[in-house]
Structures are given as C-alpha cells and as structure tokens.
Image (tube, rainbow, N blue to C red; front, side, top):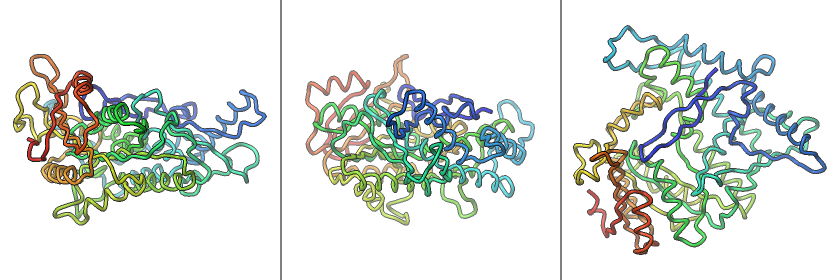
Length: 444
C-alpha cells in the first residue's frame, strides 16, 4: 500500500511537492514518524524502553484503525479498494483534454466520509497532526515532546486506549515544545488570498523576528487546514484513487466555495477546533508551557457580506496565546500575472496559475472567486493590528532573465524591529526588497 506523506516546500512556490511512503504494520514509524512519545523510564534499560515505545505505538495504531488480526495495513488497503470501486471512472479522453472532476455521491460519499471522520477522530491522527504542526526558525528544533501515562493500566502501555482522541487525549501531555526555549506566547496571523505562498514565508518571518526581538519564540504551532489534509492517509488515498480512475479529482472532497447542495467530505475546521481545545487545556494545566501560534487565514468566511466578523475569529487565537500585541502578516500575489503592476523583476506568478497548478495534487479544486474579498479583509485586519505589520508581495517563483524574481517586503509597523544593518541581511537572505510604508494605500 502507498500512502502520501507530508509534502515538501521548494523555493517560494505556494505549497508542496508529493513524496510517497509505505504504510502497514511495519510502517508504524511512518504514520507516527514525527511523534516523539515518552513513557515512565524509571529503572528500565534501553532495550526495555525501546520495547515499551514499540508497544505503545502499536497499540495507538491498532486501537485507532481496528481490523482483523490487528492488521491496520489491511484497514487502509480495504478502504482504498472500496473507494476505488465506488468512485466514477473517467470516459476516454484525448491527451490534451482536462481531466474531469466528479462529485462523490451515495455509497461513495458514505464510504469516504466515514473513513475520513474515523481517521480525524482517531488518537493516532491527532498525535500525527500535533507533532507535524510545529514550525521553528531552525528545523533541527522542530520537535514536540509528549509524555504518556495511564495509572490504571497494567501490562503493555496503551492497552487501555480506545483509539478515539476525545477519550484518550487525557493520557497524553505536552512536556516540551521545540528546544524548550519559548518564554513567551505569541500570535502571528498570516492573511492573504489562497495560493499566495503563506506557508513558505511563515518560517522566514519567525526566524526574522526571533533574531531581532528579545525573547521572541522560536517554535510555533501552525493552524493550517492544508497541513491537516496532507497528513490524512484517507484524504491522500482518495486523491490517488481519483487519479487511478483517470479523474482530475473529487469536487466535494473539499469544496472550492460555499454550496447549498454539497458537503465537504473533509472538514478541516473540525480538526482546528480539536487542536485549539487541546492546546488551550495543555496551557491551563501547565502555566510554564508557552504556546505560540501561526495562523494562515484567507478570511474567506468572515467580514463584509459574511455571517461572522473576522475580529471574532482572530480573538479566539488571541485568547489562547494571551497576545494582545499580535503580529499581522499579509502575503499576497495578484490574481493573475498579467494583473501584477510591479516591474518585471518583481512580478508574481499569480494565485490563479499557482492554484490551478496544484489543485489536482492537493485534491482541492481552486477558485479565485474570493480573491478580492480576501485581499480587502486582509488589508483591513493589517491596518487594525496593534504594532508589527508586514505585507509581502510574493513573487511565487516567477522568473525574469533566468533569475527568480524578488519579493517585496513592506514594513508598516508602528515601531519596527529592523534597522539599516539587518534590512540588508533580510534582502540578501530572502531575495526581496525591503520598503517602509505608512499606509495600506501603498499596497499595489
């Protein structure tokens, strides 16, 4: 069985390239590869501890994905077969004809939706998400440390787990975030239209602020639906099954916009709520645990002509981090390359081109219908932010004269942490041009 692992980012393109891994009982380490678990190591040899860790990992997997003979490999193989057999198959098409996107209905919808929901509610998946949602200014420090303890347990660790996160989460405690150097909790909101490159610039900003602001955290949890999708085995199985059946994708896997007739098969908002709830509880239980958040947010479902205020959405993240001096970051490209008004060496690829290029790989059909709303709301929220405000026009990997175009780094902070010396370093390190602006009207 092949399942798709997390994707990898290159240059300043908007998202990621796929890389495959093998699942199966011998692949426990793959599904939980980044999950760093600890058990009580008192009076235990290294060999004994290794055995306990393997037992705990195995119990997490077999409880989360139950199947005959505790073989979770067959659990995923069975779901793959069911999805492939119930997805429509494409009609014969010419090589240059765009592949058809279909709606997964009836039996197909029930199988896919149940499988997605089971994975999203599982203990294994939530541990996988938590451990893979950490970004640091130094990748070597990008590790989340989680201890496991169940005092009622006798025998193998994890033998009393249910495999359902809402019942099992109380046994897992975050003990350290990154290298454990965070002494404050901070919030970075990353605004901008979809397919602008918010993922790429997150680590850059964290590094810049960590290097130039005293006690600024080095590790952040990302609250990102795109990451949650890429970390789901079932989600990736659906994408791969659609390709095998000659399709472009499944329209209602994640809908491109609001719909009165269809529902998302994968709803990342469910996971966001679970993650926020767990992090909030973890911080209350341990006041010395400083949790910082990076939240990429298109603001497509809030603001003008939308049912909720964007301020309400942001306020929830402020409450968790207790950071009223939160940082506003807006990363954008123009809707198309042709609409970009900058000189040739600064022009962007455009969100439409970037979004269309990646839609089949990501399993989410791209729509630019909310582009202007995301731009308007992003600019509004940046203007209303308390102090640190950075707007980045991301070139998106576009080239001019065989050179990658430069991005434009606009600093609208009330009090900037950068001076003439480190501005030069910023421009050289991140291939951008730094400029100080005083008003959002300076954003082209």
